Image (cartoon, rainbow, N blue to C red):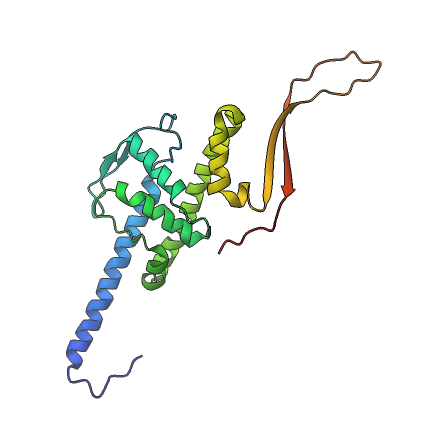
Length: 227
């Protein structure tokens, strides 16, 4: 417990200011918690290709005490996803930086009244002191990580479905945006080949048209640090 300052000429004003500061911090914690939980509950799925099956308008619902809601178009959901891909810090892939990239990308598309600070690393260090606030901040970082995993999965699925001829751009994005999985210190060669089973002399030869994906990793350098 802090001892009163004997030289303080206005102890009552100091006490009142301390109470007001604590009340404001509590209010801000509450607003952050409600906003973060609202986002995690109502966030649309990422849309990598604007013409994909997931490209639908998204309704941010009204929630009393949080926001009046908002509707964004499918093109806006696609733009939001694109911002997450192109605005990432290529030298850092830690949870806090991923969450900051996530929050910066979604902020223009959020409904009004949500309290989200896009300077996430600084905000978390200075403002998340309440145990519940810390817990929700941890959850939000994990949510952002999973959201990026969803984007990566969609890009990989598109590439594997169409191959190099019409899908090379998806692999290029994977190599650049998700290089820790696809192009960090190594070159990943993805090739499809049709294998034939070895037939014995006594068995009638038969064709096997199974497509097998062979993943070959050739080391070209040391793995870069995540920072």
